[in-house]
Amino acid sequence: MTLRPNLKFVKRSCFLCAISVSLVSLTFAQDAVPVASRSKELSKIDSRATKIDDQFIRNAVGIAGEYEKAGDVARAVDYLHAMSLLKPGVPAIEGKLKKLRDEVLAANVFNLNLEPSNTWGDPVAFVTEGKPLRVAAQGEYRLLMNSMVGPEGFPDDDPKLELVEDAPLGKLVGVIVEVPSKPNRKGRAKEKKPVPFEIGAEKVIRPRHTGYLYLKVNLPSQSKPSGSLQVQLSGYVLAPDGQNIGN
Image 1 (cartoon, helix red, strand yellow):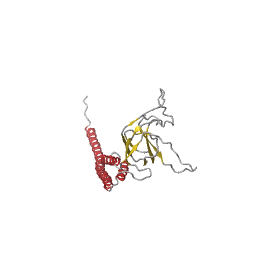
Image 2: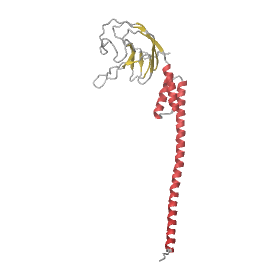
Image 3: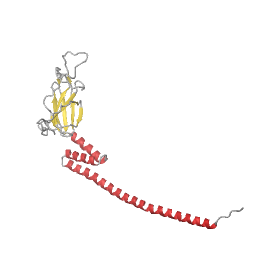
Image 4: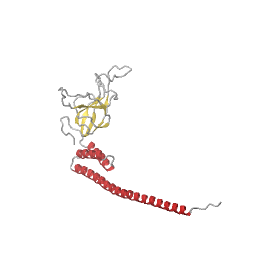
């Protein structure tokens, strides 16, 4: 028995397939147009955003430069720091900010002699919260001891010895005594115990609070050192009375 194809059915099927393909093609074409249009519009927006970013960077660096030329490098640093928070990670801003900070730390320089035999004594400077300063020291002194010491060495928790805990013996150390805060409702000001820190030959300090900077050499109170250290302060630092004492 020979099977003959139903020509009418085949023709009808082919016609339906052709219509289906045409509809699918038309649908793809309709979807493709909006995608291309959106892509073009997004490119325009990206271009405008890039121009705005570039303008922002130029303005930020330019204004900082104007502050610098006007002689107020500190204000230039503050301005650029604020801009870096709005737009973090921008090389032009970060690079300029580092350069200006280095300039600040190298400026406002003043020197003093520090006797290793002195205890904390009087404050050497007034410092401001978040404003960096540099402390650099050089020189040598001779240390003479006439004390009875056991196998445990000097106890670092004996207040009579005035040693800073965990700091090496003979190292330059500092402490910032916070300016008393305003009294609370009970009429008492919140007092925080000052925490000494190591300095050594050089250290950049970013104070956690505003107050008075004290320096000393980490030696027992009964030691008898001879000689002195030459200490240089620079950056955001004022005299204890709040006056600018640098050059």
